[in-house]
Image (cartoon, rainbow, N blue to C red; front, side, top):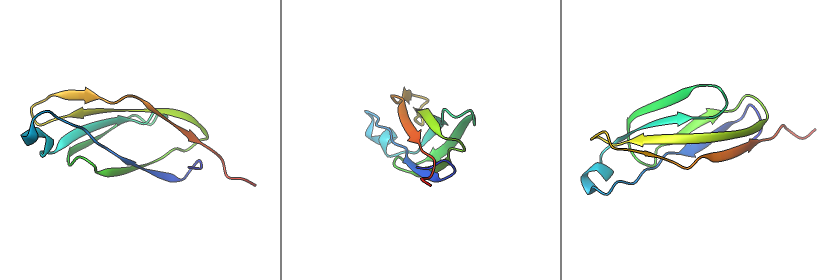
Length: 87
């Protein structure tokens, strides 16, 4: 990604309960760029969300998934590197 471009990020979770796995989840995403935590409520696993990083840099993105019963799971943080356009 280049700074200012939108990136696509699939949100996923697994649950030991087949019923919960096929139900929707709530995802709280901290993009790590100071934009605040974004909540995606009642969405299916695998939904793809977009985010734009305004500035060049490395960002640690973390996700907390919550199932219909309130069970939670945090993802390992993933770092995305933003680069400015080549001139």
